[in-house]
Amino acid sequence: MNDKQNIDWDNLGFNAHNTRSMFIANWNLSDSKWNVKGLVPYGDISLSPASTVLNYGQGIFEGTKAYLSSKERVVFFRLEENAKRFNSSSRRLCIPEIPNDIFIKAVKDTVLDNLDYMPKKDRGSIYIRPLAFGVGPILGVKPSEHYTFLVFVTPVGSYFKSGLNHLKTLVTDKYHRAATKSIGSAKAIGNYSGTLLPFKEITLEGYDEIIFLNASNENIIDEARSANIFILKDKTLKTPSLNGSILPGITRDSVLKISEKIFHLDVREEDITIEDLMNADEVFFTGTAVVVAPVGSICYNDKTVELGRSYTESITKNIRETLIDIQNENIKDPFGWVLPLD
Image (cartoon, rainbow, N blue to C red):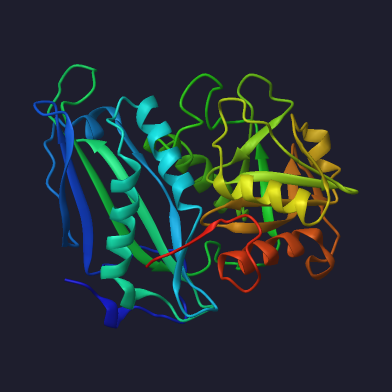
């Protein structure tokens, strides 16, 4: 059962709402292929207590959005890149890959069947969550012999409660998000559960977001708990290089291309030291959920730096608005990123 009538459309936030349906496919070792079940009513699923996703965290996910564009049609943004990254994560977690055509059809079918959950234009979007996880009962530490691929959707608004207010952030040397040669570059479920305690602690201190340091070299930064990070100094825009512990964000890649080709910035993917971070003119996070989120202050070892540049006069604002304009077809898409639903 859905709760559409109970949704506060004026204050959506970033929350999961019951919708009409979800998409399911299953894989079994016996035939070693994905068998599409298709759309089923949205609701709870049944799992064995011995399933590998519950016992060993053998699960991955993706995040993307569908938008109601200025052309009064529903569009996706770089959906094929999500399909590619999903399979990259699958390989790392020993989960059978999903053919791109099944992935894209699953996303499109689920959005189409739940289209009446699309927020009004400029009020939000439909967030899309594809998952794949081991459901077979395995007691030893090894891959499952049975898997489920699932796609559900929900209407969303702003990720941060503070909206576009400059975020108050803390750099932590108490915890690491991921190790360089581990699974930090995959959208594995375990990468996110490890950030729950650090985030709980910093929110109690009044911070909005946490910045993690590299596990091998604590003089350089990696990313936030669920977003990549950029710093701007003069006309040079930097983001940490993909060192194995950082997720290859699709929004990250989009910002790099927009910044270089539209704003003609000196774009660099390289190590960013704590000193670089604290001396930046502008700092912002990127991700499907956060889009482009400006940072207002950074605290490290009890030293707080206020980023004084007004958001309305910032390059961050220009980058964010250009990205959103492309996603919503307010301007011409020079990169061929937008994919219509039909």
